Image (cartoon, rainbow over all chains, first blue to last red; front, side, top):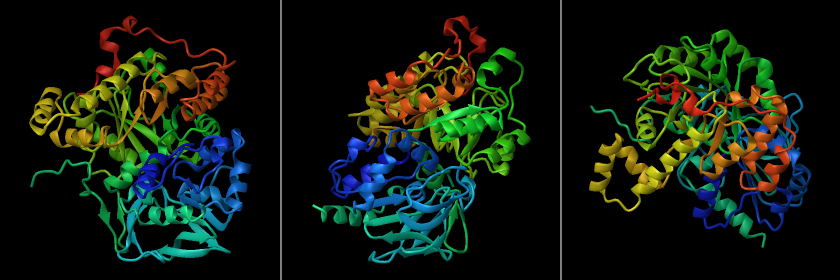
Length: 185
Length: 312
């Protein structure tokens, strides 16, 4: 709808996937997996609501559609959102509470190396841009932390990240997601 | 040691104990990636800012006067009052940008101190330096700069701009200059395809472009940073036109709040930017929007009042 979709497309195609932009409910048909990219969560949610995409998207993910959510995408999936717009609705698919821009404004955006569970080899370059802060986690598995706060969580076939693997040049998380999606066929 | 001007320059990030690096070029250019496919709206009050956010803007530009009023009232146009900027920052959760004068690095320092998310070093304000733009590398806050062609765009990137926009002709409600500038940038990049390095160096000399940045444009087939359209966009169709010409998103300045029904028009421009390649959607959202801003013919503007000519 809006956000860093072009970088995800590049990363997914480099990982061997075919991609398409999802901008209407019809575009949801026949997907093996979906990426909810970074961007402005208010803008994305509003646009999805206006074109009647929120409910079908929620249903598809609930039924097990593999989902990779980054930054704003993580906010969209969250159960509780603080410091959002007054009536900002999430999809309530992930039992976490997030604070929008919880690390501060743009001047506080940062890069940091991350240790992610299940990823072999060296640390993952975490790129955090006006990132959401995960303040509470419930029924999810935390797979990475930074400064004690969860920055990556998993629940079923959903992986949600507070950072931007699509900007990092490291394809490991995209490859893992493509493998998961390919296994759905 | 010579200054690195590669777009992958990381020199200015501040390293902290926990391995964090703040203010690197990656996070500065990264925020612009998050704005892609979106609309950035000029606002002059906190109420405007909230309206823009409600309409689906991905960021707002905090100003004292929209360009149409700056054009009308004349005089020296400067950075906005920090109090106004702070009140707009407090009113919304989306990123807030603000303008400083070309070359006025202290206005930029002030905006950075306020915690603004993006600085527009803008020809809409009266230039403070007629030769030099701001050296944008040392700042933690990212900058967006205007351009009319590829040479100008690459010079700004070499100075550290993390985002580029067309200049267009701000405050006119006339999209013709934005179209000219967007086409000039893409034609400039198309021309690079197939050139060998010697030819690229010659082209760099012809258009006043730094060779390294031009080589990056050749490799990528586009600018190495996000590229928005700005200056004269007044209707949903204008926004979609710019998107179809290949820009990553649009700025709308005077076009929204100088129109009859700002909320409706703002929502329509957001929709037309998302669905820029769907004429049926653009038709639907364009219906019954009320009067657009009046608009100006470019030849009717005295040459010395053309804003796009500012910047070097």
